Structure formats: structure tokens, C-alpha cells
Image 1 (cartoon, rainbow, N blue to C red):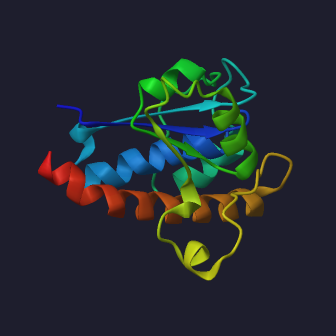
Image 2: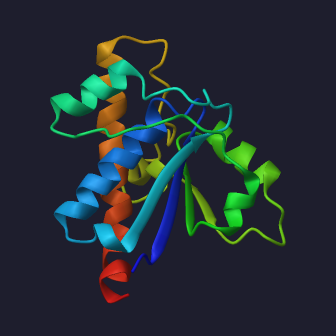
Amino acid sequence: MVTFRICFVCAGNICRSPMAEVILRHQASALGLAERLAVDSAGTAADVGFDIDRRARRALERRGYTPLGHRGRQFEPAWLSERDLVIAMEQSHLRWLESRAPKSAHTARVRLLLSYPTARARQGGSLDIPDPYFGDEAEFESCLDLVQTGCTALLGELRAELALS
């Protein structure tokens, strides 16, 4: 009974996009909407086959999330016609996706995660979620804060649509 297909996209598919995948699944499950969503993630320059970054895993686990088996994978432009939403973590990912989208087959809506109704979006702040890969644990925590905020806003917009399906 899956009604909505979402793919999160970052660069390597080992930090931000798998975090978003885990969080959105968790939030949807808490609302009883998990069976209505198919959620996955990929990268624009993926670390193919790699597990989620250990710092991202620890940040998720500290907040009670359970990151299950993950393997980094490259986003395939054909997926744009197979997904309802493709959610990018920053402007460069959005541009990458848009430049590879065959216009005739482009059925997915491509957006930035923080473009959903968040305080940042309302205040005109940056909608990019900075890559924490070269940072420390604090940067992973900050990244996770932004991803949680974005996922909450995204699910808030989808909730009525998913419940009615």
C-alpha cells in the first residue's frame, strides 16, 4: 500500500541522506504512516558500497534512532521518473539533479529538504544542510538538528495527503 516514493540525495550517501532516510522512516512510523512511504537515499558522487559514516550512526543512535543496514549508492537519473519526491540536501545537489533530469521523463518533484516550512525557510536563511564529513561530532549533531527539522516539515506537508490515500 505504498503511496509515496521519496529519495534523499547528498554527495557521498554516507552522512546526510542516510540520516534523513532513517529519521523520516522513524517519524512516519510514529504517526502510523510508514506503510504509505517508500524511502531511500543516494549520492551525486556516492561512496558506493560504504556503510553510513560512524559519526552519523552515533549521532542518530544518541537520539534513539536505529540506522539499519545501509550501503552508499549513486543516484540514477532514471529514478526521477520513479519517485514522487527527490529531496536534495544542498543547492549543488539540486543543480546536479536538475542538470541530469530528462525533461520529458521528469515526474518527481525535486526540492531542498529545508525548503519545506521551517524557521530557516520563513526567515530567508540558507536552505543548505552543510556537509559534516570533514567536521567533528558537534558538526554531525548540528547536521542532524537540521535534518530532523526538515524531515518534520516535510512529513507535516505530506501527512494529510498520506492519510487520505
